[in-house]
Image 1 (cartoon, rainbow, N blue to C red):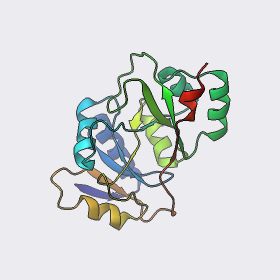
Image 2: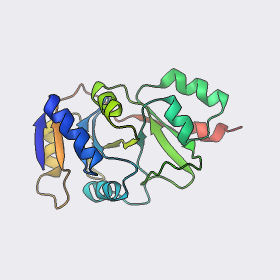
Image 3: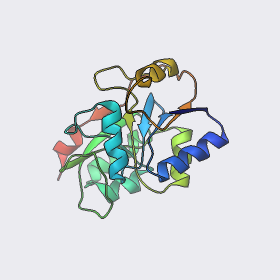
Image 4: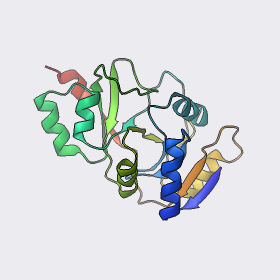
Length: 189
């Protein structure tokens, strides 16, 4: 497990690692998150192992914008208006999944949890990689998600399965994980 402070070298290494199917811990606009290519089955499987997360519990997906959401999920006009008002931001929305060529793993068969984060580092990743990434908290299942780097590091030290890289941005502004809004899936027309 490699640990790097945020700088241009760490950002480029993160992008390279994501492209190679590796798992990184990265600061987000809410908490530290586990990030990998959502379309890389082995990488997503590693996240489940690293988190010790039940495989039946889907992983949220970070996307670049509403256009990406339209390509992945069924979105009506009312839902689109709502999404435009909350994204980018700290709300993850559960939507009915479209049949698409875009492969994503660790998600539900019928629905997908999507979020457009408002964070410079994630936006840099999206400029350099043009595909969805996982957006799950960087913690062992059952333990609290954190904005404090020492807490994140402590959770993964001495674990058999560890992230490949941790981007240390120090302690983040105190925040909670994103809110999940599942009501949109109930308002389909």
